[in-house]
Length: 87
Figure 1 (cartoon, helix red, strand yellow):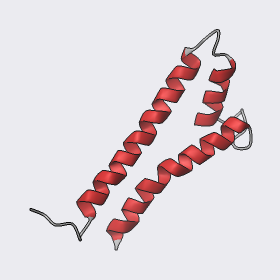
Figure 2 (cartoon, rainbow, N blue to C red; figure 1 turned 180 degrees about the horizontal axis):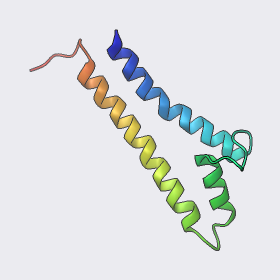
Figure 3 (cartoon, helix red, strand yellow; figure 1 turned 30 degrees about the horizontal axis):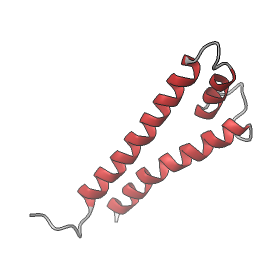
Figure 4 (cartoon, rainbow, N blue to C red; figure 1 turned 90 degrees about the horizontal axis):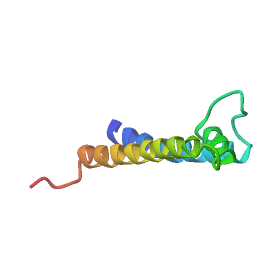
């Protein structure tokens, strides 16, 4: 029973991170004294013309984080799936 719980958790974390960052980007989540992916990307988008790296770096690292967590969840699902046939 522990396998499906771990897989569900690792596949749910990226979607929760994306939702939180989207709400913070819109100004409905974490407020500016605290840091969040959405706040960093929002600040980078505001100063994109002068300092494009303020948008590129947080956006790229955020995308890489989401992809890595999704790949981790997929790998754990393949490794912990008891119904899969092993050749």
